[in-house]
Image (cartoon, rainbow, N blue to C red; front, side, top):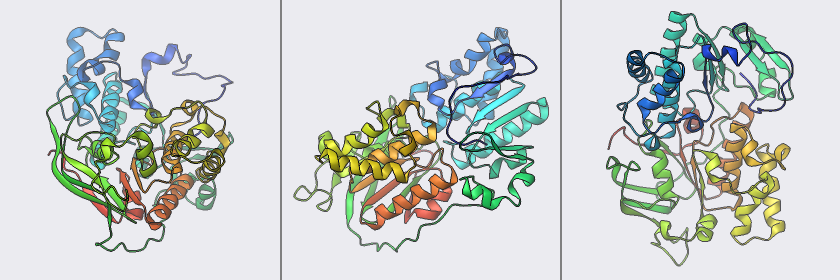
Length: 429
């Protein structure tokens, strides 16, 4: 387990399987934090086969291993599935299948189930347990929330934020008796479910800010229905959680509610409370300047929404475009950076940040324009204990001030701590 801040210069000596990392690569399988960066081919089966072909595996042995690996991660489609039609969780399963097909002696996994639904994450852990036992392989897991991984873990190494090792030992040696130390350093410990902000009860008659009527959507590039004729209101002062298995359409619904996609049928419209004098306005028709003032969106992949070369500029961009002065935009940017621990990377390029920092920056940019509705796709991905608590406190304060908050998430602790209402999308429409 490591602190989320990655990168930097390396020094010292690293040996893999008794040799250099380059020479030990044939025995190693790596799952990156961002699965999209690891997908190469246009079809799922070809992507899994790619590594086997590069290793020189005989042709007649490749496809049985591809099929076995896809089955092991709970792949819901055949090998011909286009990779550009996958959700974030499905991308994560595919990348893991590609690594498992290589049958490596050393597995290097960077938050391998972060985007998976609970059943998918459980299946991956069970698969890894069988592989580790059958092959006597070694697994190095980079993870913030380790409770469900503990049956597979022999040793826990906690890295300090400023460098060095904070704790090192068996799970019981690390976590038993060190609760206060872990809390001070933002380390998730087994049994800790996060701080729950105090929330008022939202009356069911509260005004809706956004109204979705008879909303239907298809999986991009296909005729497959994700959901059909969905009616939904986003209410002022409410936190609405959208849950469902990977591929059920959570991210698509988030983009539709945010005015970033045109629905196949039905509409998402604004209420008088959201757009005075323009009740019934279709949100996907709004120009960007109008949209950023009223609805803030956080994408599942934070890199897809960065537009500038500095964190400070990224935070100020939305407020300036919404009509605020540079001074007021700078004030908001500074406040959000301090709350979400981005002040230390104020001058950094957003694309050089760690995954957790990028996630916090994407949340901060959506909030900087003070929109009346905030729609967040997996907002707590990659967060340590301290930043998770702070983010939930920030979102609770937004809802309590009368804003509407929608979060598409697999994070059950977030839902238990924050949600006033939950919408569950089925696996199939």
